Length: 371
Ligand SMILES: [Fe+2]
Image 1 (tube, rainbow, N blue to C red):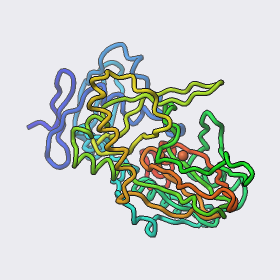
Image 2: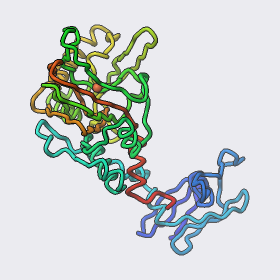
Image 3: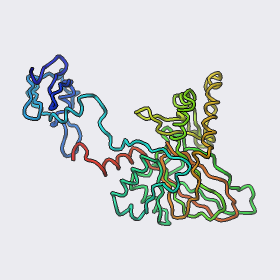
Image 4: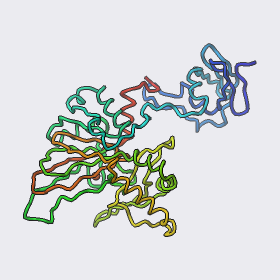
């Protein structure tokens, strides 16, 4: 049997393991190794400028490669058989940043991945470990943070650029103690993800604790993927409603009117729960058919009640000099109330994006196509 058989739109070639695989002519021509510039690493060959569908004059196996000579211009393409084998089945290219999630529950606090900030600054391998914790568990605590505004910027820059939101590049959660003003109480903050009203809510949130001497004010965190996973097992129909239905979120004031539609439960490319988008204080009036709400609201409330369950809630005190970093599309956070007159509390926060964090991880841990 011939090692290469030419067809109308593609060819069959025998791979190293003896199996025969089909490859499309456009794909073979477009991805010729000469198509890519070694310096910029970008594709410089432009298939849009080909007048006709690519067609081989000849094709044969030469050593460990497939050689094709193209009819239109006599261009010669040599593809390595190992490289072809990786694309033979149409399965997505392996992504080193696509790591399985490890779900966690209320007792996770002692096991949170912890890193000393000065060591992260000095050691890229440690940054990779930090990002790995972010990808797998969605949360990490950095300690020994410098007590400065720059300290947070410098730390965020280790995994990406600071990503502004509509309220700026940074935010400060501060309570100035004023016992004469009882209106200034430090109320509990219900469990939420940040700024769901944005088209693309920020991916990674940093909360740098600069001062915390108040009584109360415990931080509350939970793994939204763990809660959603349980909902999937317990109430598949509720899970379906929350993972398929787009609901409106808003954030409105005199000078802005942010609106977006999000699914409360987000799935990844594998159909696994990636995370959640939830905020009772930013959920807009549901503009969905009222009879649909007969089913949606009970599902929404069931999930909201699960977010209060002690099974999931990790409760702890964030200390001055610590910075908690978490996936804003997976980890749900809140704060217990505190006694305003009891001391100072100052958190400085910012965001980076998850795509850039994954990019940093790939670059730190693996060889790309061009290395
Ligand atoms: Fe928040």
